[in-house]
Structure formats: structure tokens, C-alpha cells
Length: 181
Ligand code: HEC
Ligand code: HEC
Ligand code: HEC
Ligand code: HEC
Image (tube, rainbow, N blue to C red; front, side, top):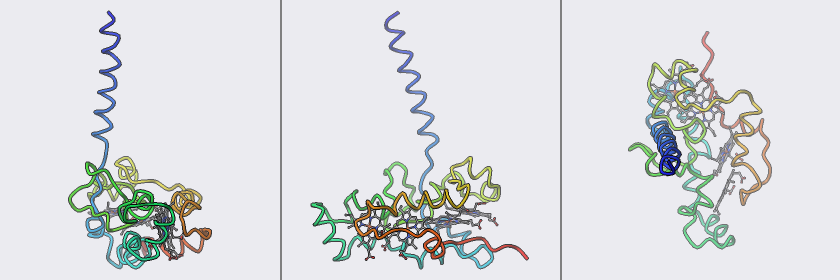
């Protein structure tokens, strides 16, 4: 009897772990998203992102300024290897969640904001927002939700933080699909 009482929670736990592992989508990298998101008609999301500071966020960690900031914080590793910096300057994903196209050097990339794409990247899923969200596309209900998400990085834990004006900053990086007609 005692053995069974111990075994049941163990089995339940194993089942839960099994389900979450299966449900964990992989990061596929910017190139794969860009295949369908670079034309004029789609809204050139790739171009807009590539010209934004986010595409350089990882490279920034190799500058002298970054070295100084890291040193002042008592970080002994290179800034580009320190979780204390990578947590906002890249999408440092568990190796198990990195698909072959994924590259941390892409910095703050599509999937950092939209969610790991392995399960929503196909055309029939992407075309149907509800399906895409069910497959892991992050949903932003309104501008307040977008702003809250930006502020998970744009906050005073950033060593160079000088405030965050949402409208202005969103204006610099937004990448809508042009309205037809
Ligand atoms: C096979 C082509 C294809 C690939 C690959 C693809 N997408 Fe899409 N995506 C689409 C299409 C088509 C739409 C619908 C666009 C529209 O509204 O006209 C879309 C819509 C979206 C939307 C808007 C959803 C909404 O309705 O609000 C986001 C965000 C998005 N894609 C992000 C991504 C990301 C991130 C990746 C990479 C992980 C990716 N896409 C890969 C084709 C693709
Ligand atoms: C994962 C963390 C992260 C998230 C989420 C994030 N950012 Fe950033 N953002 C950064 C980092 C890091 C930089 C600095 C990159 C650099 O200069 O190397 C940056 C820089 C920027 C810049 C350029 C700085 C400037 O003053 O022009 C803009 C604009 C910006 N972000 C807007 C946004 C907006 C809008 C959102 C929400 C939709 C957002 N960011 C979400 C990490 C993030
Ligand atoms: C909480 C998120 C966060 C963390 C942690 C973080 N950064 Fe940043 N970093 C940002 C954001 C957002 C920006 C752009 C706007 C700003 O300065 O707040 C940025 C900008 C920068 C810039 C460019 C500033 C400029 O305009 O010249 C440097 C350099 C930098 N970070 C270095 C680092 C280093 C080094 C670390 C680790 C010690 C680090 N950051 C940790 C979010 C973060
Ligand atoms: C800093 C965060 C961030 C990054 C990086 C980012 N996006 Fe977005 N993206 C957003 C937000 C927020 C929205 C608006 C809410 C929404 O439609 O989901 C959006 C909207 C979109 C849309 C829908 C536009 C519309 O009008 O319906 C597409 C498509 C898209 N992004 C694709 C991409 C692709 C592809 C990349 C990489 C090349 C990318 N995004 C990088 C945050 C980001």
C-alpha cells in the first residue's frame, strides 16, 4: 500500500514532465521566419528588424563600453557570455530548444518576442491566427500588453537605462503587414 502511495505521484509527475517536454517548441532562427516575412507586400519585417538596434544587441556586448559595464558589475566572464547581459541582449535558449537554424548572435530576434516558432511556422498554421496562437505564437491583446512585454527588458535593471517612452520606441521598430487596397 505504501509503495503505491509513493508510486502514484511519481507516475503523475512523469506524465506531466512528458507532456511539457512534448509541448516545448524549438527556436528556428530569423532566416526561417524571414522566408515569408521580407516582401514589400508582407511588410518587410526582416528588413525593419535587421536595421533595428535589436539585431545588434548581441554584438553590442563585445564593445569596450560593454566591457566596462561588465567589469564595474564585477562580472569576470566576457559580457557576451554572461547571463547577466545575455538575458536581455539575446535569446539564450536551452540547447535542447535550439533548432539548427537558431543563432544566439541574432540578438533580440523575431522569436524573442513572438515565441519559439517550430510549431507555428507552416503556412496553414500562420494564416490562421487562432491556430498560430495555439501552436505557441505569443498573443498581444493591445498596446498595453505590448508595452508590458517591452518593459521586461526596457527597465532599470538595464545598466544603461534612461527611461522608456513606449510610443516613440514602438514607432522605431514596429513592422505591420500593410492593409490591402
Ligand atoms: C511559410 C511562410 C511563413 C513562415 C516561415 C513564417 N510566417 Fe509568419 N505569417 C505568414 C503568413 C502568410 C501570415 C499572415 C499574414 C497576413 O496577415 O497577411 C503570417 C503572420 C504572422 C504574424 C501575425 C499574426 C497575426 O495575425 O497577428 C506574426 C507575428 C508572424 N507571422 C511571425 C512569424 C515568426 C516569428 C516566424 C518564424 C518563427 C514566422 N512568422 C514564420 C507566413 C509565414
Ligand atoms: C529581450 C529583451 C528586449 C525586449 C523584449 C525588447 N527590447 Fe528593445 N532593446 C533591447 C536591447 C538589449 C536593446 C539595445 C540593443 C543595442 O543597442 O545593442 C534594445 C533597443 C531598442 C531600441 C533602440 C534604442 C533607441 O533608443 O532607439 C528600440 C527603439 C527598442 N529597443 C524598442 C523596443 C520595443 C518597442 C519593444 C517592445 C515591442 C522592445 N524594444 C522589446 C532589448 C529588448
Ligand atoms: C534588463 C535587461 C538588460 C540587461 C540585464 C542588460 N541590458 Fe544592456 N541594454 C538593455 C536595453 C533595453 C538597452 C537599450 C536601452 C537602454 O539603454 O536601456 C541596452 C543597451 C545597452 C548598451 C548600449 C547603450 C548605448 O546606447 O550605448 C550597452 C553597451 C549595454 N546595454 C551593455 C550591457 C551589458 C554589458 C550588460 C551586462 C552587464 C547588460 N547590458 C545587461 C537591456 C539590458
Ligand atoms: C521587440 C519585439 C519584436 C521583435 C524583435 C519582432 N517583433 Fe514582430 N511584432 C512585435 C509586436 C509587439 C507586434 C504587434 C502585435 C502583434 O501583431 O502580435 C508584432 C507584429 C508582427 C507581425 C504582424 C503585423 C500585423 O500587422 O499584423 C508580423 C508578421 C511580425 N511581427 C513578424 C516579425 C518577424 C518576422 C520578426 C523578425 C524578423 C519580428 N516580427 C520581430 C514584436 C516584435
